[in-house]
Length: 475
Image (cartoon, rainbow, N blue to C red):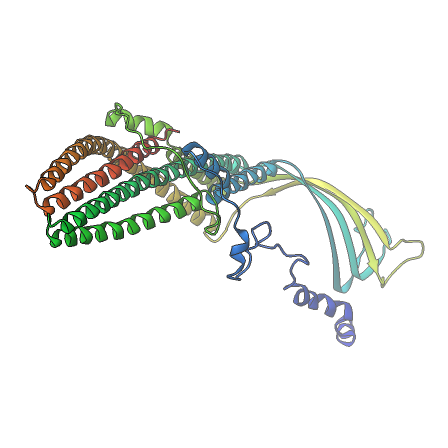
């Protein structure tokens, strides 16, 4: 009879609505989804090619190297992104630590049964009660972990080490940014000196061309000498265009490092390249200082320690977990099928107890998770070893670059002096009619080449000093 009654009744409308609910709500999203471009400049949040021009801001006045570094540290987007990663890791550590605290949830539900169910369990034999196929529940559930086999502790320690690793990476990003700004700044200073040298060479050739023109008019020089001088002058002028363009490109690179849009007003810098012959440390001393101070090495060590804690957390998953749980709430019978006289359709229910969860069979998931974390630990160890080798290479390279650039600076200083004297002699010989114009032009070209080499050697020296500081992790 009961089975026959079920077939006659058919599925109730409430059950049909309940089954349709996942289909309706399964694809729902937040009413106000997060805007990924909120807080960004308008030019970056739109695909319009004309919007970029609206972001241009007046550029700063002449910048010293210290001011450029300060501006880069305040505005560089990569550094700002790394700072947000530190905040994310801090939140992750707080979330891991919060697992130790009790959790409180409000839980509600609706259930439809094929057979009528008692609203609340009987507390004594023969107790009457309300029965219904539709039961509604609402509870406040509190749960607190008592024993997790060390899983929570390991996760907290791992998250803390990852936070430290991210902080070290941010510090390394700052160091690399300072180096990049310094390198580009020195490149601009060297390029500016080079442009001035080319301009000086052009001016000298222009004066020489005027003198030759006068000598040709007085029939004291051949017209071919004037032509050769004009050809050399044209070569210098096209080189001047090339060197100015190279300096403009370096300025654009600097603006990017300073976090300025490329359409902003051009920046200007002030300062001079200096050469201070200083004693550099030995390789083993520099290597020791690097391993103790480099932020990327400290970050790799912190990441390795975090991965070791991740292995401990995976091992703890095999242990039983014990939690204290308590709940208090109500049960309501909708459209009861049996309601004795004087019995209410609502009941309050409370419970408290200890829950023990023992993993017996997980289909190999726990073992696979442990193998994964151990493999990641081995990979982190190898990456740390690779980083040590890389640091050694960078330190040795920086030391060699400092030594090489120092020798080049001294050599080019002497070459400029000799090339200037050679040009003076050749000009004097030509004015007396005892020299050839080719020798004068070659001497002028040699002087410009010596000045070019000196500018580049000075830039390389200053960059090598900054590279050595970066390699050893010094601020």
